Length: 523
Image (cartoon, rainbow, N blue to C red; front, side):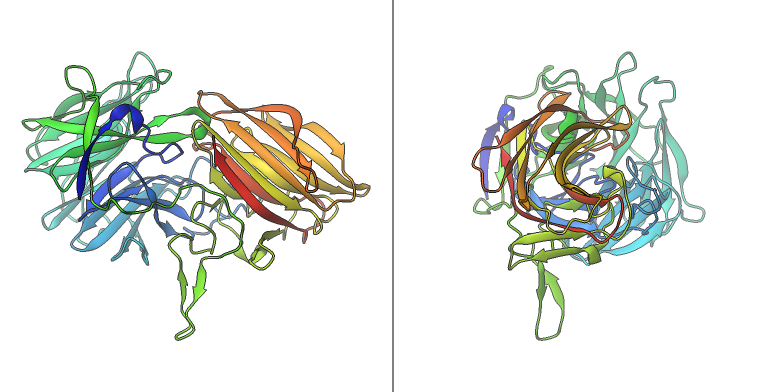
């Protein structure tokens, strides 16, 4: 265990990509962080750290939720801007608990596991608990939740629903804020006092602030106020909403997030201090210039949260003695590297990783004419301040009417594709603008089957931009496509922009595309 002082200016944001609504706990000398994953599968990613500064993938909680038409992108349905959000992660009596609500199903889910790696057992909590936060208090258990009106409900011992005759009350109201009332509950008991940490917006302008309220009993009045109001020098975007955690040495921190434009919502680590029982972040109106961090495993080598993939391995490892299938820690249960997520719940029978040829092969089984309705679209988060993705696309398996390539997934998406036509293959750039798909560039292609596509994304400003390139596999230099795409965060998807590998069939299903040598760079 090593303690070191670190400048705040060099560690924020802690994770320069889209991990919103962070809830963080410590179990022994290990920290875990759960985050919103919305419509992506596998879902509810949990990260691991030994120093609160560096994070790596630890687990996904589920491969599927309820397999609804929306979750599966079936019959024109989707769950963009919905799905799971604002998870609560707890560890109690040797068991991990993970709860969240899903706004497409209007249900509250609870998963339990003895190990962070699972298996996670699913159940429901009767009721819909927006931004719910669970508190274990002796032999009683409670959930605080809500928007504008923050409520408390005592749950039964199995966390299946409200306890008959249990405590239910309103803790706070913030109904007159014209922008955002209190929400984003994080609920704790520290030294016999009860703490609520919440966000809301300044009433006179849009800016998130972090707030706290404290009471000496669950029946008592919760009092408090603003805890942190600062944009950390970034375009008036406040830093707020997240959990708190203590270190083995007894220091406290809070993990909040900030809207960072097209890249999404990025976590920030801030020191949390106490004057008596009252928490505070700033000292004399300013953040301390440095904080002391305790590293409980200084020799640990962290896996990257984004990365390149040559598709030479899968994570499904057969155990020949008893036939079990296990998963390498760097991979998910679908066999993909953990930094990949499918746009919605995948139809995994249409996916093949050919480790001999080092290819990812995606096939179609339905007709689709929109990029954001294509199943089995494989995505990665973009990274601040600039990130780049390139991939080899082999079009030999396309049918007439198929499009396949590299895209930017967001509400106003764009994609660069090879399209198979009656007259041969063409290069096609499509951009969604004001709700409509617009053809921005076309070019006839020759007899070659493989091409390399590249997207360069600049995501520092609230509205970033991306440029697109391509080349024949035999060529050395990329050719720029005369087009620039704006990158921004919107509520319709509620996540940052992502790189995406895809295929869609507009006339006949059954086509396939092969991807190889995916390269990811941060620059």
